[in-house]
Image: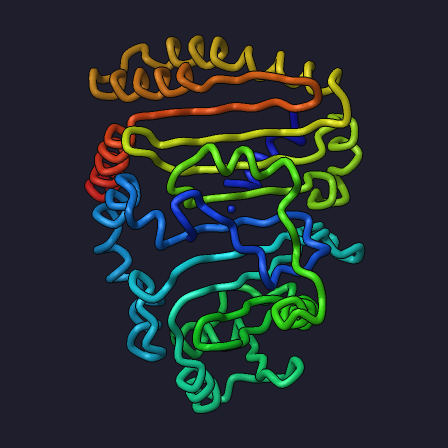
Length: 334
């Protein structure tokens, strides 16, 4: 189960109505991709609830304020989508963390970004014809606060164009620019990704990972034993429901069948745990547990050959209301 937990957690770290995922600029050797569309989520019921719940917090966030005041970047209006390429951990990395390439698409002013970096003497190098600013030092200059800890994988920030910012290690930044310019290939969606995407409306989140390629070296033997090959997550919303689709592929049907048995036992285990946990709780706490229990039972888990699929269709308005209630309680508790 460790491989499954790793994949699920990895997936949980902007487009047409059908949610076409853009991969341009993500180097072809990526182990996976996370793609989020701010444009699409803004027009969903859940997205509107997210804005209502956290707009004030974002407005008060120091980094968000500094982005607007010093760089002219308004996250809510200027950020269109986010692409995160996931790469195999470097062999000499003791922690085995995957390398990342982050592409931010939106409306930016490269000259203003570069002027800010120069005026604050942010260390820089070059990647091709582009200035590559030391990302941690840039953030320090922006916030006026030192980084909490040294960056173990030094990264750079590149204002590639008025539409795109790049955040990556220098080596990955070079590969990214080559992919963006067409001098190298960009990562492509796996062949099995299309049907799951086409089944959703207003897809605003897509995540795919080759679990073995992205796993830390210390976990690879266990991942190989599990037989899991890949994990894919899609989230969208139609007129009624929040739509969540998750699929995992395995090396063979036997490995998939074993994991399927474990997954199908989870609702019963959760029911028992919630029954015990409900003892002595307040009525509103019990009601919240029952909502969670109902959510778990709405998840449909199926298997076909070497693939396991899970899907959830949950009333979008109910999900939005639950989000707003949770955010309100969280603020009251502070």
